[in-house]
Each structure stands twice: as structure tokens, then as C-alpha cells.
Length: 222
Image 1 (spheres, rainbow, N blue to C red):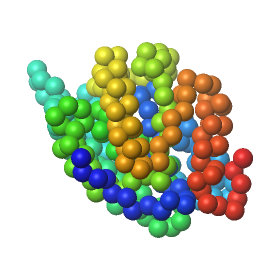
Image 2 (tube, one colour):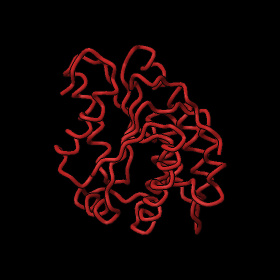
Image 3 (spheres, rainbow, N blue to C red):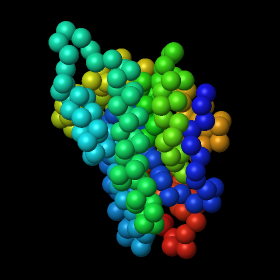
């Protein structure tokens, strides 16, 4: 397996990633964490994948049924290529400039999602190679939620179902995440798992408790 880029230091967390199934709460918690960091005097920037750049916008259209192929599903290989291209574009356009300005960047998803969604079976090494130049996060927090619970949350929120959100697919993705996180953690990546089925406030408190020791900052966050 190709090693993903390790251009980070071990004594601080400047790129923090929140991962989880659709409905795990990563979007909500990303916003909350950035707001919290700012109230504590830290420059912080919230972002997401797919990004808000040109490739990310195309991906969002495709995930909600746009650009469909008549009588056929768009291949996972196509999505794998687009997600990897969006990630590098995202880093160049948004993430690296924010880091260069001294901000802590909190991203709702990163390459872990690609490995969990498209990197199963024979395509795993290929997806890993596509993402080999992506910046390695300083800290990744996985919000663990059962697929059926995540599905209930999506319905309750009135969300339009995306291509990868049916229950069977999400069960496969959950297994993909489990394998991905174990593999990356064994390779030395900082990955923490939290109970995403706790209340939003409990999840947020746990996130703050995890993030604070990694910031290497003089400003307390608790």
C-alpha cells in the first residue's frame, strides 16, 4: 500500500478531519469546533469534501443525480478519480493557503472517505495511489454511528438521498471505514473514534477534549 503524505509535525494539530457515515454529524461538529476555536482566540477555518471548488461542485451535482448516464450507474472508478482530483485542488486552492496564514483547518471528510467508499476490493491500492499526494491530517476524529441510525437521521433532516446513501451501501461503507482506520492507524496516523450516537453536546465535548492536547497552544480550549 502506497504511503500517504506525512508532511505534518507530531506536536500540534493544524489540519483536523472529522469523518463518519452520512448522518454521523460531521458537518455539525465541524462548524461547532471552528466556532469554539475562534472564541478561544484561534484562527480557524471550516471546509468540506467534496469541496466548494469547481471539481467539488461537479461531484455534488453527480451525487444528487446530476449528469446521469441513461440506464447505467456512474462507475466507482470515475468517482474515485474525481474525488482524488478535487482533494488536490482543494488543498491547493483552500487548505494550504489557510494553513500558511496560521489557521487551524477543520475539514468535514478527507481521503478516509475515498478509501471507505471507493477503496474496497481490488481498487484499494489504486485509490490509495490516487490520494498519495494528499496532505496527511494531524488528527482525524471518526464519529461512529450505526448505518441504521445514520439513515434515520438523514430522513429526519429531510435530506435528499445521494447515490451512496442507501442502507446496504452504508453498511458496506461502515465496514470500509473500519478497515481503513485500522490500517492508517497502524501506519502511524493519529485517529480517534468517538461514539457519534451520543447527544450532539456530548459528542462536541468529547471532540474538544481530544483536540485540546494536540494543539500545542497556550490558549486553553476547555
